[in-house]
Amino acid sequence: MKRLFLNPLIRILFIVLAAGAFIFLESILFKTMFSNPGSSIESQYNILLLTILLFLCFSAFLVVWALKNWGYANKPWVTLFAAYGLPFLAILITYTWLQFENAPLIEGRLVTSFFRATWQPLLYFWQVMVLLFSLWLLFPRLPSNPPFQLKELPVGILTGLACGLINVFIISVISNMTAQQDASLTAITPPSLLHWMTISLSLSLAPYTLEKFYRQVLMQFWQKRYGMTKGFWMVAGSFAVLTFQPVLWLPALCSAIVFGILIRRQHVGTIMIAHALTNALILFVGWQWVY
Image (cartoon, rainbow, N blue to C red; front, side):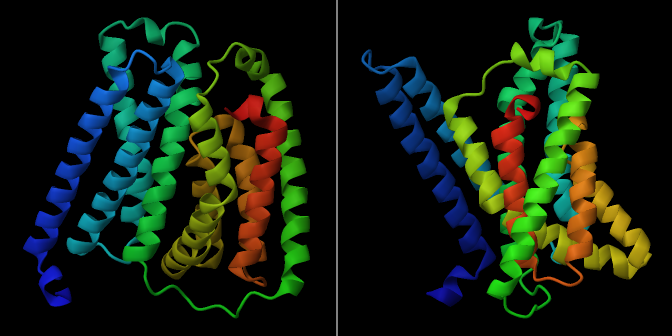
């Protein structure tokens, strides 16, 4: 049975059948949910968002699976393009189309608020899913590290608290200088499902996937190709810019520098703890400036 499943045609057929079953079940769910007069608008909206999240998760798996079968394993630049380049192209095409159609959404700051409230959390989810599946399928043999020891836990906690406080301070200063804080007060409030999804990802899968990919995969790849110093700064710069939020560029760069230095002496688990605590402080103290 296992040998039969390894046949590429059988795997493709299985994926097509799974996609068809997913679409069929969703159509039944939509018909039942949206035709029910007793269901609230919020419930319908959350069901729609949950469907989008499931679709993005399935699509991310298909993209990474296709890259593996096309011979793009152990090539971090391909993973970067899939996680960040593809959604950037989608956003660029959508914005260009809205400009061409003179859509009311692009007037004033509405498109920016809409991006921060809906597209940004969905973009974040896509990036984490692509990196997660890539670590599983494209980079199965990561460099082995000594096992994580409890004595490293205080280092991760202190680093995370320090980076988080510094980041919140930088974000508040930049927001006040650019008047972004005033704009955020009238921004679209993100739906509750996206709000809690973003918090959950930021404190769990995101630190794991980002640190494993940037610090263990990408840094070693670029340092071997471009040298230790140049590779270090290329990873730090990419980590910052690819947040796609100018207000986070400087804070993310500071964190990337600290994490890049720390990985030389500490287990990657220490960096994950620091990353999660940094995210926690940014989300719970500076949420209004970020989303």
